[in-house]
Amino acid sequence: MASTANPTRDEFAALLDESLGGAADGGFEGRVVKGTITAIEGDKAVIDVGLKSEGRVALREFAMPGQPHGLSVGDEVEVYVDRVENSEGEAMLSRDRARREAAWDKLENEFGEGKRVDGVIFGRVKGGFTVDLDGAVAFLPGSQVDIRPVRDVQPLMDIPQPFQILKMDRRRGNIVVSRRAVLEETRAEQRSGLISGLAEGQIIDGVVKNIT
Image (cartoon, rainbow, N blue to C red; front, top):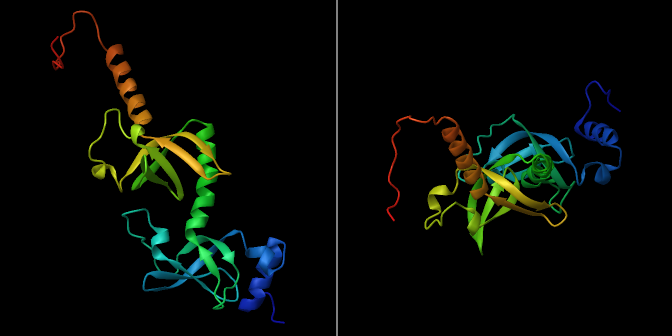
């Protein structure tokens, strides 16, 4: 056996597997691990995570909707190991699943603290829209898009913006978010700031909104 100072690929896989505490399948499958991009072939990235074979992941899994992937050979990325080896002898890896696992952990903490979260509206579904929360997919009801009804949502799609999580259930994979809640909170903060700065006798500019 070669020395551990210069292990072969097989020996490296065995050492990493030992550190994960299990046989090859139990040690890698179902885990998020770090890998290195060794090549970019067409629309896929070839990634080495220390197994006997490399895996291929679609480049679109590394990009936010409407954004470039920005990957280069030699970059280190985190991926989820679905299977150590498929029928073609390649590792089955998923960047989407890795992002989803990490996103859920982060979102649960932010939801518990009542924080806003950043996301991108990327699709339409019955009753609303889908939002990418850095890997986790949330539902945005049509009534929660804006304070007033919005006829054309296209200008709001594919751009990062804040949302408020209304509810989430990791077991069922459900997340419901609101853009309206963020707008209402922001408007209330602005109104409060304006009122606190008013004084009797002060002259300010205003706009007539209605005549009754």
